[in-house]
Structures are given as structure tokens and as C-alpha cells.
Length: 482
Image (tube, rainbow, N blue to C red; front, top):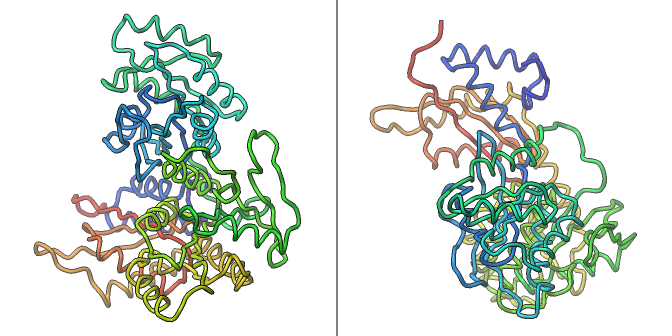
């Protein structure tokens, strides 16, 4: 490899030394290169699957991700925990945002198809537009086409429910939508999905190269997320009213302001679109689904997720889902406990117990106790965000990492299993934003030992406010190379 980017986080000299070590330990150097390159990529590209109700979007999503996860049901308004899934095709990974199953508005598409499609399109790098070929293009389909054109994102057109040769002619009529070639598929039987996915990969950008020490241009991007009525609007308004520089209404949108530029602590930050900035969706049924889709869209656009928790209420399953979404997205994280000024001693005591038990998965995230209503401790928000960003961008040199791993393995070896004791042989940090490590081992490392490694990495190097991704490559049994 002669391109610096292909080395992930490693410089040329460090890379050469690392590959020599890998060869000595009996690893195939091609495998090691592939592992570093795979782990070193930035966020995965996002594909939004859009279309009107009951055209087979969720069935197609299940076909794309290779497992039955998206809920498939004939009636709209089906509630789901997740809207974002990870998929792989032809060796390339990407995210899929499923917009199936929302509540269909009897008054037309204004508050249903349009709203949910906009959320998904906003977060996406490309869109897969699904049309029922047996029905043909409807007025609702035409309305979605207008949205797609306005958004300017690459589009692949799937003509679904084509189960045989007779359906090919139905698919051909969809050229009339003006989106290019309709790809005839059967999401139910899998017919044509290979060609469709090949086209999707042509439209999606490659996973971005990892950049080290290079700041993205413009203000840092923050998503303010949390379950409904947790105080997102109040917090944003308090922040904006006190320290507002400019509220920027970006062009090219049919809705309310997409992003707000706000000065805090002498720095301008971009608060990306969240539920607090938008007008309410004019639907009660399906509101949880909209909230999930909106949160996913905001997080995909952000670098930092500030998760608001209502301290006057018990930490809920919905809070946990939102936290999991933010962690899995690999964003820097700050936890803001809102309405702190409303707590009495008893509630404060029980809240601290809840935080210990329910918030374990983000115990590494900076915490601020705030009041959106009174402005209490708002000045602590920016230092917490800056701390999380610093952890998110931290890079440990390979030499220092391996010295640490050597001491760790010597002091705390992996438990013996089946008469064998797997060892970590060496490792490298292949990426940042969030920090991503590849460890090369002599055998399988149990999940508990991986968590132990993560905990010790945090103790040694900080990483406050950021998830850490650890992948392990095991040496194949073929003896050391000469």
C-alpha cells in the first residue's frame, strides 16, 4: 500500500514496523491490512428507503439486511424500536433507514408521507424509492418524487412486487416518474435484489477515509435528543435567547429552520435539527415512530449527541433506546439531567440509584445537571461538549498502545478455556471519531474480557464522552511464517 490513507492511523514508518510484527506473529499481512483499513473508515454511508404505505419497504429492508428485523405488517402505524440497520453487500457496509409502517394520514400526504420522507432523506447519502409496480405510479408517489428532486440526493427506483416476466411491463411504465431506470424486484422472493443493490452501491459514497488531526470545516455539530417532552425545546430556547448570534434558515428546505447557529462560551455551535426545533407533527398515532426517525436523522448529522433526561420522571425504556441509538451511531455523548432544580431530597436519592443501575452503558459520558427553565448550570454544557469531542478525537500511538497491552496481558491474562489461554499479541488504533481499535490475538477473546480491555483503555487514556469500538482478529492455525 503506498497511499498514506490506507494505513489507517499509522504513519509510513509505524506501519512498516507494525506489518513486520504481524508477519513475525504468523498473521497474513493481507488480512492485517484489510483489518486496519476496515476499522479505519469513518461513519458508514446511509441509504433511506422511502415510499408510500404497503409497497413492501420493510420486506425489502429485511431482504437487504439479510434478517427479519424491520416489522412487516399490513396495517400502518406499527410501532418499532429501531429505524436504522446495518447492511453489507459485495463487501461494502452501509446503514439502512427504514421509513415503513408510519401512520397514514387520512387527509392526504402532507403530514405523513412528506414528513417521514423528509426526515429520512435529510439523514441519507442516497435514497431507495420503492413503488408497487402492480399499482403503478400514484399521486402519492408523484409527491414523493417531488421531495426527492428537491432534496437533490441520488435515487434508485425499485419497482416492487414483480414476481415474473408478466410484471416486467408494469415496471417499465415507471420510467414515467423521471427518476431513471426502474429496477424490477420482488422483496418477498428476493428476485432482482442483487442488481438493485449493485446500483445502490454505485449511488452511495464509499465509507469516508479516516482523517486524523483534521477538523471538519465549520461549526461543530450538536444534536439535542431525548424522549418527547423532556425539555429539548426549552433548553434550545434558553440557550438561543441568552447567547444568540444568528439563527440560520438554510436554503433548500420546505420546513422550519433546519439548523440553528448559536454562540456559547465564545464559540459558535451548530445545533442540528431535532424535535425541539420543529413544529409538532399533526398526528397522535405513530408519534413515537416519528420521534425515532427524527432522532436518527439528527444523530446522523451530528458529531455530539446531548441526551436530555427528565430527572422528575423515572429513567425509562425509551430513554435507554435513545442512548443505545446514540452509542451505536458512534457519536460523542453528553448526558444532561434536566429539571434538576425541581428535585426534592428523596427524588434526588432515588435518581442517583437509577443513574448507577440504568445508565451504566454511558458511565463514561460527561454529566451536567441543568435546568432549561431557569438556565441553571448552562455554562457547564460547553466544557462537557468540548471534553466529549476531545475524547472522540483521541489517538493513541501504536507503540504506546502495545506497551499498555503487554502490561495488561501480563497482569491480567485471559481466563483459560478448554485448556487454552488466548493472548492479545499486539494491536493498533485504526480510527478516531469514535476511537476504533483492532487487536490481533492467538484465540477468541470473550465479551467479558473485551469489556475489561475497554475499561482499562479508558482508565489509561481517558476517552471521556466517546464510545470505543474494539474488533479482534484471531491468528489462523497454520504456524508462523518463515
